[in-house]
Image (cartoon, rainbow, N blue to C red):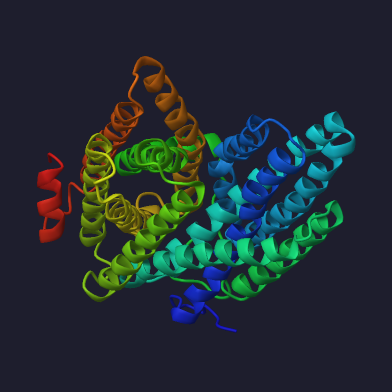
Amino acid sequence: MQRATGRHLGWLGMVRLGLVQMALGSIVVLTTSTLNRVMVVELALPAMLPGALVGLHYGVQMMRPRWGHGADQGGRRTPWILGGMALLALGGVAAAWATVLMASAPGLGLMAAVVAFVVIGIGVGAAGTNLLALMAVRVAPARRAAAATIAWLMMIGGIAVTAGVAGGLLDPFSHQRLIAVACGVAALAFTLAVLGVAGVERGALPGSDASPRRTRVRFRAALSEVWAEPQARVFTLFVFASMLAYSAQDLILEPFAGHVFGMTPGQSTQLAGVQHGGVFLGMAVVGVLGTAWGRGRPAVLRGWTIWGCIGSALALIALAWGGQMGPGWPLGLNVFVLGAFNGAFAVAAIGSMMGLASDGAGGREGTRVGLWGAAQAVAFGLGGFLGTVAVDAARALMADPAAAYSIVFAGEGVLFLVSAILAARVGRDLRDAPLYGAAAGIAGE
């Protein structure tokens, strides 16, 4: 196994940390997708029930700064990552058991599901926050874009593989099979996480959070110090605004394709696949170019972030226009471009986050990453809900569904432009990079 004895992680080390992200995605997709379908279809429960449970797991993650601070104080993140993964695995199995219990005892099953999804939220928050904080201090600046790309592509891969394999194993469906598959996914994911972090924190990087001596600071004081840092505060607002715009489109894109372009459920599902293909391309391009050309320079990563937000805004505004044009509009291409810019801004923002996590007072990496993770979780929880509410409200006021969707997409585009302005303000001191300078100029800086 690769050790981090006074050195930044190499490529193998980054792939190993990507295994943890893959494990996270594997369990989460089982609880938010498969169990969602079972509750609504097989058990004929209201669709709002799994929606509320998923929202609960996002709400719990508002405590991410606290879990990051705990690791800051202890000086090691591996116990928090593995502890979080253990909770996530147990929560995933408990959620499957609770879903089965709902068939015979709905009230008891619901109470068990609430506890399970709270545990899932704690596990995701504790493991995910400290994984990103660990990457922030163990990955060399020149490789941060590549590290972000590796981690997120491996997470997407884990989601895809789990969905495919678990889906196959669940047929013919039975409650016993559901619990067995959940146990298998949880056990494999935890094993991958252990392999991913084993030995990574051996040895200390000079100036990193691995120092054995550390002044004890109360959580409220540490969080106040981080919030007082201008860059951390603006970056928090950027994360919230961009993730709100990013998540608001998720639940309305396929209904838009059906209502306005007459696509069948199968065709709209394929359209979602086209979007994910664009996300994959955007992430890969930024990962390669950000490493080969940018060499980890913060200005270059921030430039990609701003351009990704601007491109996402233009693609959403194009969707709004396309809704008025009707079936002749190249919807597939439009959605692919939207996905590509989404992927580009996401990876660049994560790479920038790794650099910002170590800025300011030392020993606060986990608290900073936790603050940004909490902003992301709240935005994701609100985004899907607000996007659907906005469409319903617009359709209630307008006879033309295309106009209703167009207004919402245009609003999301404006939110991405606001995100670009916020990203530009994070990098006020980085105007030496051409890519950053041009993007910041468009963003109004």
